[in-house]
Structures are given as structure tokens and as C-alpha cells.
Length: 214
Ligand code: 5RP
Image 1 (cartoon, protein in one colour):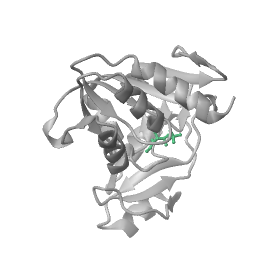
Image 2: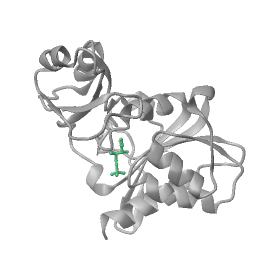
Image 3: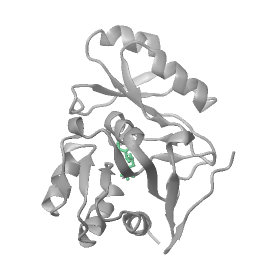
């Protein structure tokens, strides 16, 4: 079974978790692209927040109501893809450069649900880890980060420079703390297990809900 089918069935399973009246966070990427029509097809009365202009445009085109994230302090559920999912549920996100907004939306949700094809399950987190950097003082930030590559993509919608940390990961917890402490780093793509409520993975033509291994 191909990756697109696995993404679609994971996304369709997650769409069933959404209930009438909910406020819903929508992630970004090719897996979320399958979520949006599945959600729209349910015909629920829901209000959404989008993590990227691409998702916002696609959601609106399907008739989903999208609100200004600046005005929404709480979401019932957020659903998003991932680039890597470790057995203990540490995640790497940001392949689509939306990780800063995605982390804000995940943190605002009672329930953050990760959807993915089976290739995203990894035995351990490895580089690259996406970064969003403040343009001011960029050369100094890059020097402090040492192992970093600028991505050849436009700035984020919030004006951030997109890059990837390419050094050793070791323990994600320590890297999470260190990247978060470097002046000039807006945010990075490591998401801690405590943020994740559920993982839904398509494998072949079946949906798996792997438990978190501690
Ligand atoms: C975007 C993300 C995506 O969720 C992640 O890159 C997975 O993308 P896809 O669903 O296309 O495989 O973090 O910033």
C-alpha cells in the first residue's frame, strides 16, 4: 500500500474524533491535506484554527470555518502530521516549516492527535530538526547553533528564517532544552511526548494506534 493511502486512512480515522461544536486545530502538510476533506464531509458545526496559509486556504475552500488564531485561547482538539515519531512519542515536526505555529496550536488543544503514514515511525529521533530563527542577529545565532543549515525556502508567515539543526540529537529532552535556550531561536521541531494525546498511523490498508513506550 502506498504512503498516500496510509496518510488518508490515518486522517480519516482522526476526522471521526471531531464532534459537533468543537474548536479544532488544523496542522499542515500532505497528511493534513487528507484530513480537511474528511472533516468537511462530516458536515459538523465546528470552528477551526489553521497552522499555515496553505491549510487555511484549503480549509476555507472546503467550507470549513477558520478563525483568527490570535483570538482563540483554547481548542478541543488539534490534528497534525509529523516527520518522525519515536516509540516514546517524541516527535520531529516542521518538514513543512510550520512547526512554530503547529506547536502553539498543539499546546492550545486539550487533545493533540498525530496522524502519519508508517514511514514516520522511527526507532529513535535523528537529525535534521527544523528551526525557525529571528532574522535579527542571524549570523550570531547560526554561530551559536554550530551544526545548522539554512533552508532554501521563503520566510515563515511570521517572518522567521527556516533552518535545520543537523548536529547529534542524543537525548531529545536535552536537545529540546538547549535549542529552546539559544537566543534567536523562535522555536524548533521537537515536540515532547507530554504534548501528544494519540498517534494514528496508517499501515497498509489498516489503522494502527501505537501505545507510547516509556
Ligand atoms: C509541517 C509539518 C508536517 O506535519 C510534517 O512535515 C509532516 O508532513 P507530511 O504530512 O506532508 O508528511 O510538521 O511543518
